[in-house]
Length: 259
Image (cartoon, rainbow, N blue to C red; front, side, top):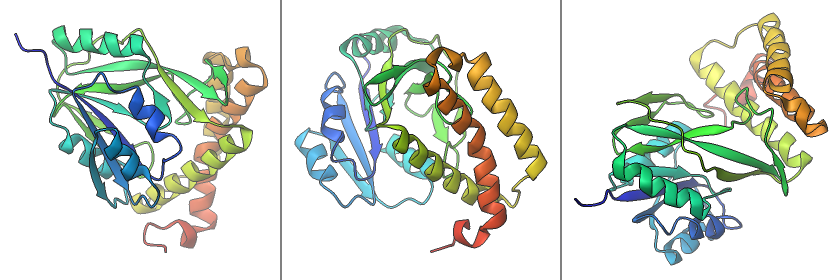
């Protein structure tokens, strides 16, 4: 029986500083596909030097560019990886074992999140981070929704067991990077809210701020990370509240058709 072919997909924009290290950890795959969205740096040169097939274009929506990447892959299975992530050899071996025998359409993979060189295991959630991601799927089983940030997912087929080995995600370099990401995410979410014509209410988003912060710090055990856990919990709570305030107070800056 022929072994299933595996495509490794990286969707990126101006990631020349991190792309080569990411691609180096994906050599166990049968195919490398790199989708570059409006990149102006050396990302394309780096990807081609690594043997990847490069798809270049411009996509307004995160979901649209990720679907373009899925469509470009030719393997039986697709592993989606971001440029700030690394696949340890032990995870690569597990992925190969899983796709050789799995009857399912998709699997989640655990994530080890790093801020700088510090591993932060607890407290992630509230659309500001996650401890597991659905990144391994059969070709055609997954479609991303048409949103700018954290697009929804539609699946065909059944979910299989979560893998045991983890992706290494170097999510932020330092606290300033955490806060810049919060600003980017909330601006993109504000555009999605305005496009949908429903920005919510201030009282509702204040309640979400409290519930998300408490959930990440207490239920998701962010308190185990000390000040780092508190920082993550506050950002998770602030994300929908800031998006609402940007859409409400500065709609002219965040409308999808704004320059």
